[in-house]
Length: 342
Image (cartoon, rainbow, N blue to C red):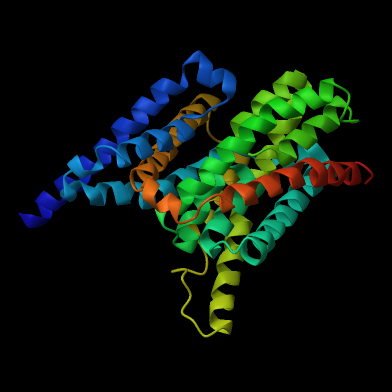
């Protein structure tokens, strides 16, 4: 009887989170949000944070496991299904230039972010890793995927996502403006590689690419998807590195598993999707469901985020993200130029 009641309370918490995700999905269809390239994931975490800092104390405590379930299990499921957005043919379509740019941007940006965050800004390791992952790979989705690997507190994920929103939105408007003003000496196709290789969110990439031309947008999205695909090897390497680092200094590793299996399944799903066994209409439906699951996870993370926790961190995550933003603009440009010489 007790277990049945516990399950019902957990389900109530999940449905409560789903209600927020539905609201975020509805709001994302507004013209303003569409024009700004703001995804339901971002709206979801904002709604969750508003709730956390206003009415959270009204939530029945018995529902909290449902919220935590959304930040863990539903999150991992969403990352796995994200693989249906990719195919291995995407890599072939942009060639060596797109592949090199993606790998070089992800590795250099994360390495720079970790070094600057921990050494110079004296940020805690979890916030540094999450902020650097969001800037280097694919914005909010990368933060979501990295959070369970390092067992970070939800508010740290929310901080990292907020930096993605700020600088990804700036990049979405800045890149097309600089290109049309003649400040970026690249062809339209090369500009697509630059946009896909250096802008944070997929939605931001789509908006910036289309501001150039449809061909640049297509190239940008493919390069961006390669960066997304790098989540899996990144998380596996990160898990091993954190475990070895903890052993080296004589501490117990904070990561529960060395290999994040959801990242492996993410690659397997992408591989399966590469064979086009499923009709496009079904894949489209799966992607819609996946977006909703990720929106639930973001909403739940927001619900676990109190403004009071931000005060302890201050402006340092924003400084870190700003430094990485400048690196993506200038360093990313020279990485693209180098890749085009191959």
